[in-house]
Length: 325
Ligand SMILES: NC(=O)c1ccc[n+]([C@@H]2O[C@H](COP(=O)([O-])OP(=O)(O)OC[C@H]3O[C@@H](n4cnc5c(N)ncnc54)[C@H](O)[C@@H]3O)[C@@H](O)[C@H]2O)c1
Image 1 (cartoon, protein in one colour):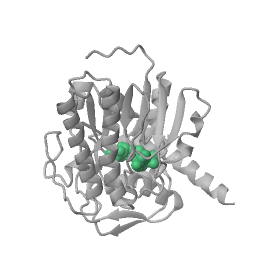
Image 2: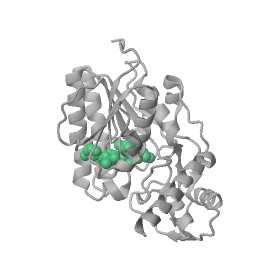
Image 3: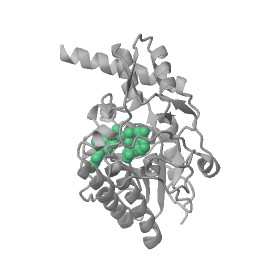
Image 4: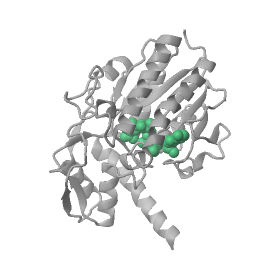
């Protein structure tokens, strides 16, 4: 069915007080929409959205999406879910519930409203991939019973639910497989590699490398990712995804650590620790589909995106330090 909105939509962003969600909320407001941010503040924080409280087009509701929600909106971005291993392993049962019950509740809402819904899925659905780089038709190599499974399998089940609601009930769905994203408002204690390295470098502490530091990751700047999510949401109804969104430029952990050390002017040394269980050795998106279907590709180089990210961490650490005084 063709979309009949003029320009302003009422958009629900679950997880809108988190890292990615808060940037998406900013962008949707800038684009002239009304935004309802729903978040239980597990890993998100009011600080990420406090600059929006005076905006009459912004609303915040503290709510856990594992419980049903009755509201009226035109579009749903489902981002609610802790994204870093430290956070999603803190309460693994709740993590699975957030992905699975959360998806059921949000899909139920979309079904009642007959509105379009986008799922923030993840490259973790590929597990420790046997195929490199990963294309969307690769089914993955995932441990169903390991410590990361609550996240990986939860997200896989959410994808299943999205596609069953689409096939069975004709719901307009969009599934984005998000690869590592970084930028300002990342949680400084989330244990993810970018935040870890920056925090350690700014404190002058040794930078922790796991294994021999040759495992690779790709890093997408948050503004590029938000752009991709919005393009996906606005793509023709017949395009459901799943579609990889990420930056294909691949860096070893050692290369990233060296870049961070240079940009922070830090004298931190490197310390080597054993690889955590189920840690993928290589991760790189193939974004051919996103290029073709969405006309999307990231434009921010890692060396550029690190600058505002490091500036944010500096500010954040200074703020924390002064608040403690
Ligand atoms: N950042 C990345 O690199 C990345 C990579 C792949 C996928 N993703 C996905 O993107 C989404 C956003 O990730 P992020 O990096 O912004 O993480 P984040 O932890 O900063 O944000 C997640 C938000 O969801 C909220 N939340 C968690 N459980 C909830 C629940 N039950 N009900 C309501 N709110 C809940 C948290 O409080 C937080 O604000 C997640 O779904 C994540 O799986 C992110």
